[in-house]
Image 1 (cartoon, rainbow over the protein chains, first blue to last red):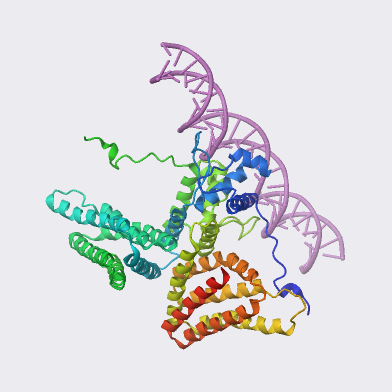
Image 2 (image 1 turned 135 degrees about the vertical axis):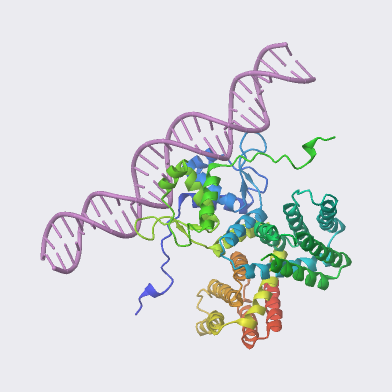
Length: 255
Length: 255
DNA sequence: ACCTTTCTGTGGTCTGACCACATGCGGCGA
DNA sequence: TCGCCGCATGTGGTCAGACCACAGAAAGGT
């Protein structure tokens, strides 16, 4: 029984597609330092002839790299035209998580739990090491959210849109600012991606709220204010607990 | 000064590319339930004529969807051929994080911190709710790692490869099993992606170890054993502390 | 010197063809 | 009748060559 079929020595022959070769070579060049962020790739026609593949293969590789957030295409001519190496992991992560959240490949409860864990971490870090600049970046959307309340009151009853979308955007900005104040790029990017992926579902939840909206908004703003002050004072434990309570209660109210 | 140029009302006209339209429509169909996981997409030629775009545009869209882990292409004929809708968020996340870790878009310290946070969470969850099956899935690679040690001792000194790669693979499997035992799909997938992204750097670290390798391996196995037993006993706090200590010391030794 | 026009190179798109592959079906032989 | 072989069919993968819209750069006129 020295039959090797049960062992792992027989790798299936991977028919490596041409565009995958292009992806690999571009990533290799970036890894080797030949291509740095901000550099321009050779033109698609040039790459195609150099690698002896068709331009279509190069373009498919570009789409893959673009989806990974490694490359940004720009038409036209001149310095900043062409395909440019650009590290945008946050955007790419956001796109990826959004589609899979929408596709319900992740249970909502799991997403909420993950958000809590990440934002607890970010809040704790932010309370410990937030710079004044980062702190004011958190304060800005907070103040703007509170301002929408006063604005709304001043013109109540005339049937104007009550800015739930704007409030949602500011809420997103608030949580993103906290994540970035934490100082951990990876945690921040994942946090941003999850919050952005939940943007539309949360907005739909806000729209479902009928007359409760002003009350809910007041409650949310109070919670935001509490989180911010805990961070500003440097109380990491309290900030973490408050942000978790905020996220859980908000999701409970909107579901 | 009612010049609107300073405000945000003027969104730049986004020239939506044809392949992006295709991506959007496919995602829309999936979201609407018309396309479920496991279903086959219409053929590329068919899609092209229906959407009145070229097949090249359809193919570029497929590359984007493939990079997102939403679609899997298969050549040939028959039932399982063609482009199939398939949710593979874990693989897609892994590819994305791997390239950005390799591109050093994330500081190593940040990655280590994020890994600690995620695996602490997974270990705590696993200690609380791991099923016997999940537990044995954790135990299997652990036993295999310990077995390599005995195997190595039995044939020491004949210059054979000492299986650092195999050990690294088993180590990866061990951490992945813990993440999946935690029961949170999103956390598990992110954990898997980060561990897989670190696979090659860790292997290179192992290779750099010279004669220290056997001692390091013994230390790693002991730490793994400790984590496993804490989870098996249900001691979530201890499991979290041990896994964090394990990750931090391992990265310190390998850097 | 300034503005206008033209040139050039970029990504974006399309067309139509051919290839490798895997299945399924039909015909052929036993 | 049964079983096997081989071609027909349809899939994604690849290629070649062409044209378009765009934006900066260069050349030209005022």
